[in-house]
Image (cartoon, rainbow, N blue to C red; front, side, top):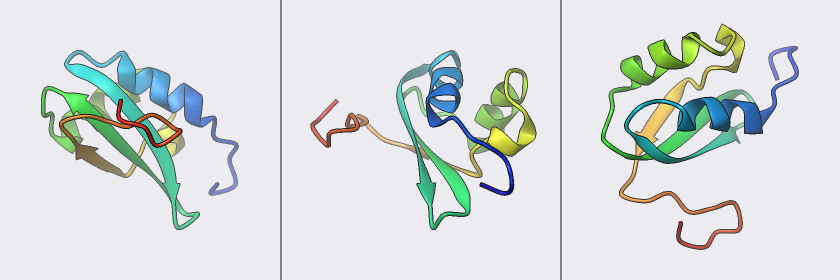
Length: 79
């Protein structure tokens, strides 16, 4: 993506280490950018982006963040 190799699991693990995030999932949208879904405490995208920047290169940071009451796992079952 964008000429870089992105490990979705690495991005998800970094998201889960952010204080206040209970569950998280990251997906590729339209083949062009990463979208993160998270549950737990509602946090602004700017806050999440800043915290992820401490452990991820900029090209691995999701461009969009969505808060949900719960985040379903990869199989589509309620999380």
